[in-house]
Image (cartoon, rainbow, N blue to C red; front, top):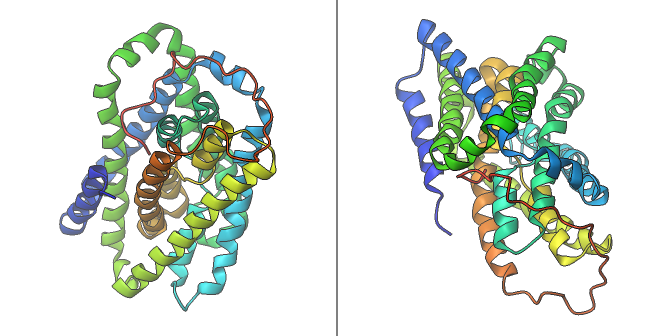
Length: 340
């Protein structure tokens, strides 16, 4: 399982922040630039998503409800259960980051990419990932306030408004302007894909620079990082199994189960990073460390699973299925250039 080159860029960005952290006026500039970059990223998400397909996707409410339940109910419950691993495997700050990881929305682009690779219900994956991201703009901060309490020291009504302005408003603006610029974005999606990657790298640099300035990295040891990786591997395995076999128990067909597995078992780095910056402030670097590690792990494991799904029979022996609603065309939707 090869390492995603983008992860190497992320690690290089962390190293750059460790050696040359942004301080003073430079930190203010970096923070402002990362906020603008993430807003533009979600604007592009809004332009890429076909409003017609999003409305058509609402017809498949059982699938979307299942993905949302996995993302915002099952994942957080597993995160709360991991509290018992402190201090044996996890320190309290790493546990907080792990719990925050379980609260963020699902991915959009990698859910689409892996569902397509495995010949699943791609329109359902498009809508499920998009709905999860939109719901998460409001639900994730509220869950963080309820479950993390004072740990999410930056949470307030103002922080919720800030997240909505940074993520939801640009997305809606992209939907409004899609009629006029959707074709341009579709034609230049490879070039604009650099915005996706650059936005995340800028947010990572800003968060880890602030962590270096605050001197919080003495809290993490290689042994603790190893423990965190073990916990995240178990978490991912449990969610992959629950989404696949749970989909079968709920009588979804094979194509829908593939979409549920890939959309319901993953977490979004693009959504989680700006939220953590707002909610955790100076401690955002430790809060997003578990999410960064989980991001790479989910890409590696899901790439293998997607390839293995191609070898499955089209209908598993003995599986009972129900027809899915008519799937809308996906020709009007850009899937981005890099799965996240």
